Image 1 (cartoon, rainbow, N blue to C red):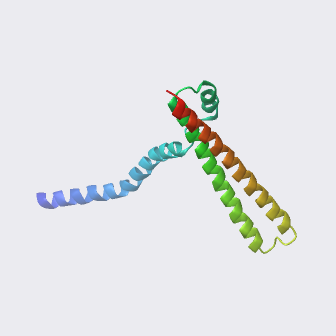
Image 2 (image 1 turned 30 degrees about the horizontal axis):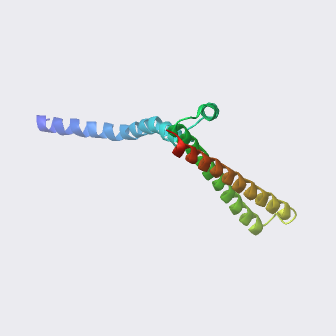
Image 3 (image 1 turned 180 degrees about the horizontal axis):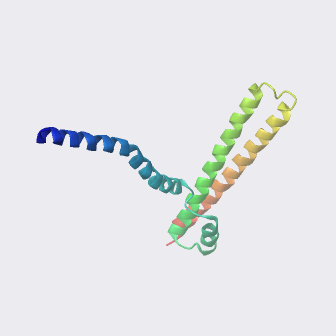
Amino acid sequence: MSSAETRVTTMNSMTNKLRRGTPLIILFIACLIGPVRWVSSQASLKPDQLDELIVEAKSKADHESLAEYFEQEAQALQTKAERHQKLAENYEKGGSYEKVKGFMLQHCNAMIRSYRGAAEENLALARMHRQLAAEAR
């Protein structure tokens, strides 16, 4: 076997090894990055941090953080209300719910009202914190 043939064989072997290893490398990177992306998508304040910030809030940044938290909560609640709206539509169309359809629809409508009301309350808190942020130094 000539040296050129040996180099080609070696390069083919390395290419095959790399191809076999690529999915593992990608999986490894995904495992590292996945949790970081998940954490960053969550509300920026944990419950104990929220409690402390509410008690200690003085600065513009404090009140802006609180406003953002309550806006995120409002969005999450609105999403739940929309989900229950879809559930109500599906129960209305559903096949085997005739005996309990009325109860199911009442439940969904009550949840929609509750989630929308809670979303509005969270937005009101966010507006108050935005106002306090504007007045803070």
